[in-house]
Each structure stands twice: as C-alpha cells, then as structure tokens.
Length: 562
Image (cartoon, rainbow, N blue to C red; front, side, top):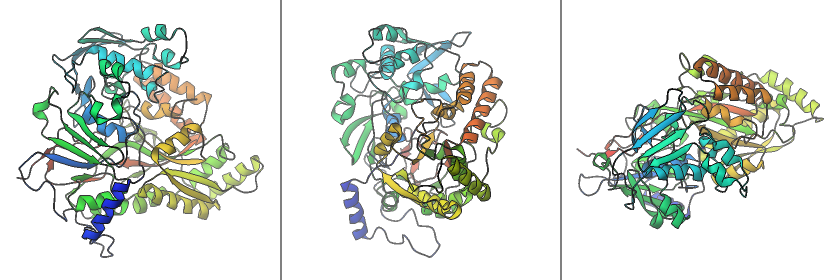
C-alpha cells in the first residue's frame, strides 16, 4: 500500500495565509527548545452540543475511491470508513465478523463459505448480497479494469488466469466463470483458493475485497467519481466532495452497527503541507493530525506531551533503484549507495518519530514460526563507507565509467520526504562524491513514472496489506505490478513460489527469509527505516485505534467534552 502526498490546493494556500494573518502561527519556529503547545487556539468542538463532527486531514486527493481500483493509503483511509468487507479488524488487530456473520473452512483449507448477515443494505437502500462480493472481486480481476491491486485476488482459483488474459480474449467470459468465487444465493459466498493461504481471512478485511453494488456499477460505471452518485456499505457515506479541497462523510443509517457509531460526521480537508496541517491542529481546525512535521513530532515525543501518540506501523521507508538504468544495473553500485547512508542520523535527527533503522525490508510486528520474523532475520547488510567507496569504484569500472553520472531522486510532495532526500543527498556527496538532484512530484505523477520506469531513484514506502511477510516479499517478483525497481532474479522468484505454495509454516517462513537475503544481497531497493505511527490527537476525541497495518481508525471514535 503506497504512501502518498500531493500538491497543496489553492484553498489550502489561501487558508494558510489567513491563519498567518490571524496570528495562529505564534510560537512556531522559536528557539526556546520548548515543544509547541497542541492546545493553542479555540477548538471547533468546544461544547457537548450539536452534531459530533470529527475534523481530519487526508493530505491529498484520493487516486480512486472505487475498491477495485484504489491503491494508496490516501484512498484506503476513506474507504475504510465508507465500506466494509466480509471481515474487519478489532483495535487489537484481530479479525472479526463484518458483512459475513460466520464462515466455514473445508478440511483442506481451500474452500471458504461465508454466510452474510441478515438485512445488510447499501447506503442507497439496495440489499448487500453475496453476488455483490462476487461481482466486485471479478471486476477487479477483469483485465479490462486494469486494477493495480488485482494481484491480491490471485489467491482465488483461476484468478491469475483471468487477470492475465488479453482484454479482447475470446474466452474471457469462460475464464471469469472459472474464478473461485461464487454466490450460491444472496447470503452465501463460496470461495475456492488455488492454494492454501494462511492469511486469507486477513485479506477479506482489505479494501480490494470490499463489495460493490452491482446494480449501481452496471447503471453508472462512473459512480465512484462524485459524492452525488457514491454508494457504499460501511459506517459512513460520502455526501460532499470538493475535489482537491475537502470531503464530507456522514453516519450511514443503513449500517447494521450504526448504534455503535458515535460520530455524526467526519470532515476531511486535503492539505499536503504538514506544517500547515499542524498549525490548523493548533488553532482547533483539526482534531487529529497525521503525519506530523518531523521537528514537531520530535519535540512532542521528547516532552511526553499527552496529545502525542505513537504506535507500531507495519511499513518500510525505502528508495527504489531503477535497475534498467546504467550504472544502477550494477549490483556493486547499488550496494555502495545503500552502505553510504547513515540511518541513525536519518531517524534521530531528521525523521524524529522513533523509527528504527532498516537493514532488511520486512518490518517488525509479523509472527514467525516462533518469535518475530524481522528479529529472527536480523540485519542483512551494514553501513560501511570505506567498503562503499571500493564497491562504487569497481562497479563503475565494470560499466566503463570513471565517475558516477549525476542523477535525480524523485519524491512525492512532502516536507518530511524533502528533508530526508536532502540528508541522503549530502551523505552521498560527502561519502561517495556522488551528485544527486532531488525533485518533488505530485504523488500520482510519481507513481505513474515509477510504473513506466521513467526515473532513476525514487522515494517509496509500503504498508503491509496483511500481517504476513509475503505482503512485502512478493513486491519484487519478476514483472510484479509493484516491482518498480524493474529487477528480476530467478532464485528469488523460486523462493517466493515455495513460500506461496507450501502448506508448512516452517517451510514457507524459511523460504521468505532466504528470499529476503537474496533481495538484500542484490539491493535493487534501499531500505531506510521502519516506520512508526506518530500523530497528535485532541484529548476530547475518544475511541481512536491504530491497527499495525492501517492508518489511525476513526470509525468508532467519539467526541466527549465532559
């Protein structure tokens, strides 16, 4: 799941200017060493009267709010409030019943039968049926949809074959009919897997597995582009969407668990600049801010500010290296760049959110056969400037070059990414004599250029879609949809295939550890750090929770001024 940032809208800029003029920025940037006070300014939610409205910042315009085509956290944070899958997650990260009340699993683990709750309705009053799930999953797999996340449905029998077919294949309907998902009646969904998948139940809570109202989709294929035509089945419904400015969600009275939904409304603004968002939080225009400016989160954490929260995050910050671009095609050059970065400086002096330096790609928090997967794997490479210089010289010579050509590092618009890029830029210059230009881009533009291979080095981040090492490890299989490094290794592919097809936990975990060693030995990407989840939250907001692989969850939040 990609991280995201986009450009500041004109409204955001105007609002920031208004805040400046009103003096809401007082105290920012002082040299006193004291942490900024999150409570400055008047709060919109100052009394226990009127509707309960939560004010959040999504940082940027969603790329897609259709479950079948969404692909980023700027999409999923909204989708998680608007939709619900067969299952959902508790604050402790456990899977519990969602649209499906119960399910049965065959003895071989290949057939899952889900039984939907009675009386489920879409926000427009249509009944939610098992057929809506079958339709949605096949829609995402259909090659005509061109869904980047279709591969998450490859666990279904026939999923790979259907999605890999040509858009105009004569047997497309036949391939669709063979996909292992079938609504046997309105309340029963039978799912047949290609192989036993230990984390399949976790996947059913992920947004690519959400249902779509078949009737609405067939009558209006563009229903997900505007609030006026938007239909969902979750705790909230979308009632207003001012593109690149704001979005308004209100409580969905058709939601089966509506009595436990305390908020009347969730208002999102789209402010890419973290400092502007933080200032809005200080002035009371936001009730929660995530992400925080790096210097601010460092100060809040150091002062033990009660409004500062930090939790684990199943995600890794890394740089893509375009392995098709000379001399990044040379493993010695790639390893030299990785070994010349001081990650301790990055996390302590730049990121300042309690992050952990990454010397592997899979973050902590995933169970192994015994213990934690990342801890068991340990560090798979080390920093060594002297060795980096030696490798760079050898690698360049192998490519017929006497010096490293200048190149460009692209990152999505965000002050934090900029500061990290500038720090690494200086480390490469000082340690290796390598010159790099840092360029910020709109998030979607960056994604498009990565997919097209139109870049040299790019900032990237990945949030685990489910709690298993495979959510990271299958990113770099040959020709994988998110293999933006354009790297290919047969040994790596073989280890991943073993891990995906084995029914023995020890065998599959060993295979993934072996694959990760290959990945880090080849270094097609450069791990920087393992994320944490630092955010500020007003004390009157209750019920927020942060699953390890999700953004902070607002669905069951409440506002209490007592």
